[in-house]
Image 1 (cartoon, rainbow, N blue to C red):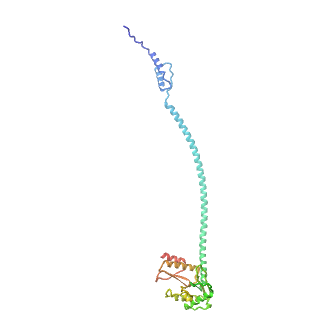
Image 2: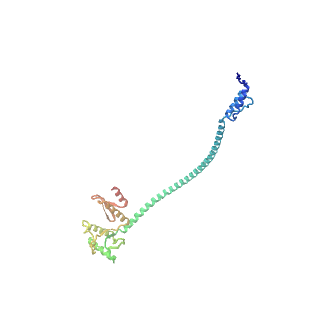
Length: 308
């Protein structure tokens, strides 16, 4: 019967050496190799050099630090450029502000100078306006004095070969019709005004103002309380044809004529109002039974418009 022999026991040193040799097969660069080598030293493995332990975090931290330093350097460089640009912009703003202040000061001085000139012009204009009003009043008075002895007869028909003597004959017939006989020497000057619309008015200048005023009074008295057909017309002047109304008024100045036109326009807009001229003065009555109002300027007429 064969005997089963068990292998002789290995010594502890031999097994330890074999174990160390087997474990050295693992790559030394891995973490496992490092741990094995460390364990070999601790276990007393011969001919084993002690090496430091390496970790993944060391490489990552170094790269991160280098990356952060690079970013920081770039940011500092960009910040330096930004700071330079900001300084340049600040300097430009300071210069622009100085220029703006100079411009504002210049404009302010110009405004003050123009304001002073404007005030002087306004004062001068006010003085000129007063002088103009005074001159207009003097011219108006002179023109009234010149025309104080003249009358204006409108709607006398125009003949082809009309002469001053023909006009004088019409006026003499007119005087006979209103019971104001006129002598040939009482008419100083007579003529017809040329206008775009024919016939133009006939201007008659008497020798005295009193003669003119009496003639106007007689015309007003003749037309008073008469119908439209019975009032003064061309038949009273012994002019053949259909009778047309004839109007006799004072020879008005340019200013008074315009004022009278505006007054008539006012009465057209207010049917109850009426206006007339007496001895070169314009009067208006707003309503029946109300007192008459003397219109001497356009401002007087404007006041009536505001009152209405």
